[in-house]
Length: 397
Ligand code: HEM
Figure (tube, rainbow, N blue to C red):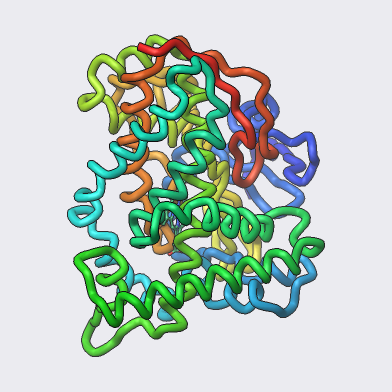
């Protein structure tokens, strides 16, 4: 056993906040903490060492049951999705899905992401204020997925509505909202099925056609697997990107000199601007794992079945790993962050997310300045966070 004092964090407490002195103090005291749901890994070094460990599985398969949901469309969809599949089943779907996400192919969409960002900014730039979530981040994130999947962009409101309803399954009201979650999931599955049929019958030079036609040694994704995946891509890509853009505005509003630096040389700094947001203020505050077997790490026995939360934000601001860790520094060379997780379950959409945010942040920085955040409302600062509503006042350049 470790001889250091082990801090305790009550991560179920409604008052718990990842961005807090209590969590920073825990990290500065020890590399891990005990929580009411297993362990939390706090230091950068140990997140880096354990994030890809093969002693762990992703471990969210029982999420519906833990919330009292034992059947129904969401339950059945969840059990089959890439995020919770393990071992050979996971590897197979990943192998058949990865080529569609080839960075070279996704890169071709960058120009369209840039146009989209500017089109949205045009709608409100003359007002000097914007409700950033609903007038930029949500339409941007959803329309990016429409572009990727070849969905008519005019349908974004519908996709956003269905995706948000399904997203409630990750919250505390899952059981109460099961009926609406199941109805939204069924509608999105039908929507996805029609898209898939269309590409099977009328192949195009696009992402979905690549996904539908990928064939490895005679193995292909089945229609049911494709349908499941389309729903997962919307589910996994929409709220995350929306939240991350809101968090980026929050961070840059506190460091206007870095916003000016990005505005002055957007091509030079776009990449680091995105990486600094992901390191300093990630929407995925933690990534969850479950020990698949009992093992020893640094003298600590981690028993099979233990839930382990990899604390991404607090490891990304670990002063042992980063100079001026709590500050955006667009010129710094930083070690990799864990906002997209790591190991076999790492975010398959990360190149899409990086490309679209590398379009969004420079478009914003080059067109608006003097960011002033108004009275925002926020999701709880645990698991996944971000603003629900983010009024921003600014000066048009
Ligand atoms: C800022 C945006 C995003 C963030 C912060 C994010 C974060 C994450 C994280 C933390 C994971 C789990 C990684 C792990 O357990 O190691 C994940 C998995 C996943 N993400 Fe993302 N994501 C984003 C955007 C997207 C987009 C745009 C898509 C789809 C186009 C997507 C699709 C997925 C999928 C399918 C998985 C499951 C992968 C697997 O289990 O093999 N994500 N994401």
